[in-house]
Image 1 (cartoon, helix red, strand yellow):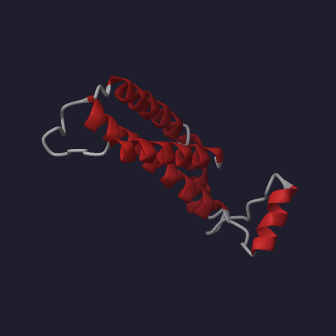
Image 2 (image 1 turned 45 degrees about the horizontal axis):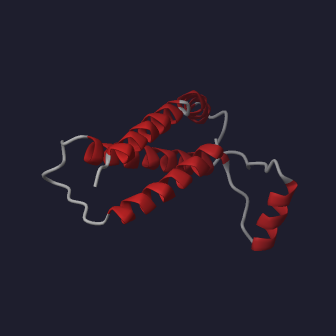
Length: 128
């Protein structure tokens, strides 16, 4: 099977998530500065929902409010995970660096995992 299209797609997604991950840094630095100078205390202020319907649904489900630092760290780790997944997948499919170490017998699992990681990464970046 020819994986050239998939390799190009994974390479593009690696660059996309890498650029998006670099865009987190301007938000991360002031947050850390505010935390270390104690202008903001851990776990941070409560996050306000922009949609009133989200607050209503959250209340009906019994989910408590989210604080700034927990939410930011969780979405940053999710975004970092998406980038690392696409980077490693690109190294496996796009290059021959790991050809002797990684053998993928079922490509459909990789396609499904790629779709799920892409969706999770997009959701993580939408939280920023």
